[in-house]
Amino acid sequence: MDKLTVRDIDVAQKQVLVRVDFNVPHDEAGNITNDKRIREALPTINYLLDQQAKVILVSHMGRPKGKIVEELRLDQVAQRLEELLGKPVVKVNDTIGAEVESAVAALESGQVLMLENVRFYKEETDNDPQFAKKLADLADVFVNDAFGTAHRAHASTEGVAHYLPSAAGFLIEKEIEALSKAIHQPEHPVVAVIGGAKVSTKIKLLWNLLDIADVICIGGAMANNFILATGRQVGCSLVEKEYVDEALAIQKEAKKKGVKFMVPTGFLIGNSLEMDCNWGELGIDDIDETDRMELRKEPIYIQDIGWRAMESYKEEISQAKTVIWNGPMGRFENWKFERGTKRMAEAMGENTEALTIVGGGETAAAVEKFGLQDKMSHVSTGGGACLEFLEGKELPGIVVLNNKQ
Ligand code: ADP
Ligand code: MG
Picture (cartoon, protein in one colour):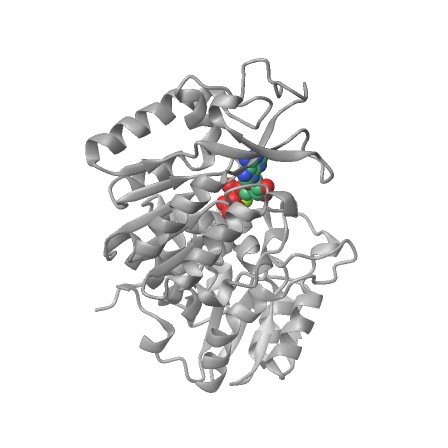
């Protein structure tokens, strides 16, 4: 990575403002249901503490839209961090202002202070320069370790870096190294496995992958667009009809570039989207235009890729040197339709020679559900940030950090 990291700067006895992504899932009472994001930030925080820095943490949680929302205060987060660090964490009830300034002044080397939810100020998402300056005034150095929000140019992710020496934390370093290897210097063959709910959110990714991948395997609801593009039917399945032409254009471009573009020829289908639906497998030519299964006169909802697609995608994955996966192959939340997604995860886990990259919120959740996260080279912590990076975009929260000399 060409950006400074925490290792490159002298932080001893300094006040270090660290942007973390503690936007953890929680229930209505505010109890944390998954603390993965807090644990992901520990290497950077522990390193800074070992270096005798004064650590000031800033994060957002949820979407309070510039107002104080009691359930979105970060007290429980600070408490969980305290347990994980095995060290006291001082929590203040504001993000800037007098209370914060005196807490910062009282902070000693090797201590941690947690600021209040930064999105209680609308200046945060506005990237207001004065607000960013106030955050910067709390510290001598800025460290960004919030990969999950690095695609947003907000005051605490981007604005603040204009006023302080700025470096990346270990989580951002890890993410950028894995993701850039996959898209900028991948070992070939590169196999991309792309699925998910909406083709519209993955169109830019597909275009970018045409210049990177040797093989693109399509699954999820977006496969339906490619089926419609060949003049076939998809019954009642989820589809964004307005993207059919673009699906055709992508496929044409793939052919021109010599990218093997694979679309399923069969699907696991259900007669509804309910958990207890009747289900089975159909070839694409068996789905007729009446939206009905010929024999049973029932609606057709495509919910997973068929076994032929599973087998051929697995074969491609097993030969790959790099695998980039974004988007589940089916509605894996229902066990009846988890198989396609699970087979992809297993095939990636078995190919220990390849760099295997998993991106996307639900895709990562699926890999965790199958207990295969440790078999992957890298499971990204950033849904939107990872997607934008794989699309070839620069992330504002990273661009703004100081370059290595
Ligand atoms: P990610 O968060 O990994 O980027 P997406 O948000 O694009 O993935 O899509 C995830 C969702 O796609 C999952 O919740 C899954 O249920 C849904 N999905 C996958 N295949 C289908 C399908 N054939 N029909 C409807 N939904 C699907
Ligand atoms: Mg998603």
